[in-house]
Image (cartoon, rainbow, N blue to C red; front, side, top):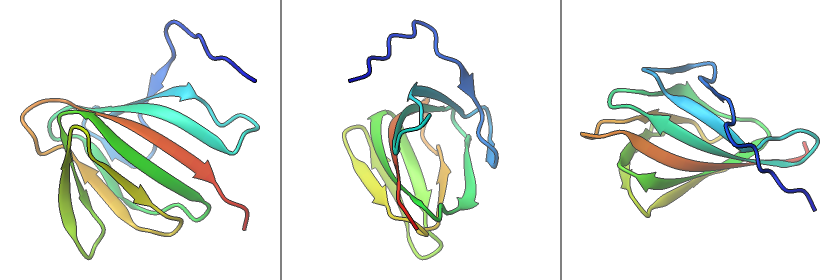
Length: 112
């Protein structure tokens, strides 16, 4: 068992993200196979089209809304909705809403 109780975890902008989007590690990868993050995207912020070769990611919208584009379809999720991207699934994110978007992002590493 491991408990995380960091009072002020550091936030950062991941590579390929823009507009003031910040991610905070709640449960960092470290030597584990998963991470849990909070992603905060101001209006107009997001992430460029990308994919992860060995990660699955779940985005669960805690507040606001977030638009996703896979190159084949585009959809907007709102508070209480979620999406799963499997390894190699391309995705682009953009907050096109009227308020900040807050998402819980759970990432799981897969063996190749």
